[in-house]
Image 1 (cartoon, rainbow, N blue to C red):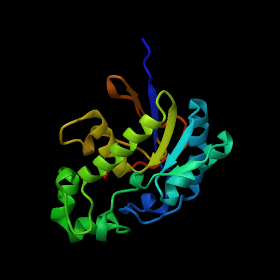
Image 2: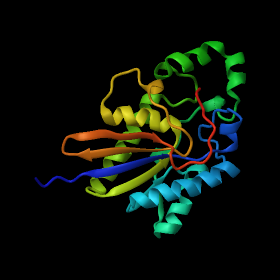
Image 3: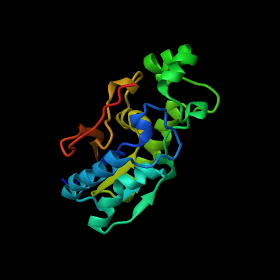
Image 4: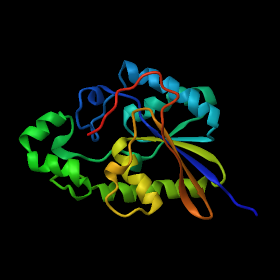
Length: 212
């Protein structure tokens, strides 16, 4: 049977200061911190073993930086995909989660219990994130059919993207966990998308987990 199987490696960017400080990041353009830069090298060791033929990134620095060691080692360019950008979080961007919990308890509770329903001025919905990121992956799978590609993006993109690829009904946001610098893999073939591996961190020597 002639079947083209495409491997999509999903990378969450390495740690930045806002991860460590438990802030909502959104599209605020944080750079990797010292640990994040080390994680980028460790991501590279794992990705080079998987031999991607193309690298794609969110436009934000922390995502691009996470792929730079891989790009150097494999001699590849990092292509920027704007629709892999993080969710727009409006006035929450850069704010500590503890402050949001204290000042806006109703919205914070919805974030913790039903984020798919959360909406406030300036915030992009999780469904919007899921639709745009799935469209990117569909397009790249068509472009790279039968190849292995790597995409570096953000937690609040990966959490809608994976269920959108798997056609999962709500709720789904808190059913998946993605650590900083983790690697997950989707496979696409004539049966559609399947989840091959989730939140691989065996390549990392250190990480700080984010649960909220």
